[in-house]
Length: 405
Image 1 (cartoon, one colour):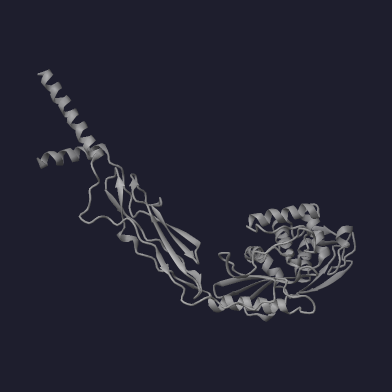
Image 2 (cartoon, one colour; image 1 turned 90 degrees about the horizontal axis):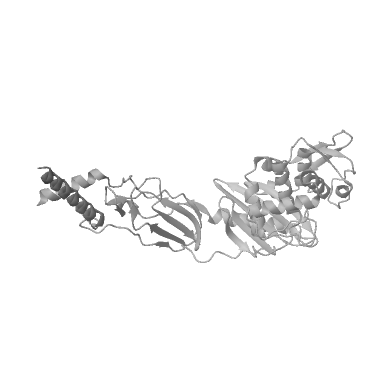
């Protein structure tokens, strides 16, 4: 009797093992209709021919969407050029990020020796850092820039290293800073596109915006010995609807330069013109900037991109309690588009998933490209969690198998 029971138990184990092997190696249950596991790419042609060529005076120019850093228009936008006092945008930002606005800044002999345009404060005089930022940005004082650089960086050279580190962080790969004021110096230069990247970062700083939008201000040295009246030299700020300002520049090598920003509705554009004429053509930079901004606001608006409904997707699941799983259709935000843009949509869906499947683990992506440049990749997620098969599932399968005989 004991031997019979042993044989019966052994036979049951063998049968159980064979059923497990059958389950582990059986093909996935196929629905009557093969599951949809891929979506062909989408393409939307431009609605209009090439955009008009803007007649700009500038040697190099760029218009950029501040939100995405996407170049919307360029003329030698990646050419290395001197950028004059637009350099002071970086000087101001580093002072705001690394300095105490109430700290006392003294003018060294080196700072006091800087050429016009300058504050004219004598060596040894001191000011609050916050006051000097208005001198820097409203009047573009070269001596103030050096005083700030020495205060924040320990020296002009130390501050230049900070400037270049920040430029690298912002993706300004073709920029090299040597001076804090932008006076002509060997190796000191940037590109219109890089300066737009800097401006895109700058407009996120509320303290920076407050400074550059101030019409006038009077500052006084710490000991109260002398006051200085400052007025904003940015004509763009008061002549263009939605203008945020930013910074002018001029040297004999760089010509007239301007980095600007403007905001209307939910669109913020930044622009840069370098080498936009030389004396006496001081107004060229304003004309160029207005033309770039008009192009942006006239032709670009936020629009929704239609994508396929992915609810019909059924991804096979290996070793799961369910053989397939549906996926979600991602929410795609509106993109800044013009009639001149082509749009490509690529769907990359996993051909198979391994249990366990989780709703917070991506099962693919939808990638949007504008004019063949990827601008966003959005994850596709399973609609439900799928647990792996357990031992109890084997018993149920065995029972169904025997009942089927």
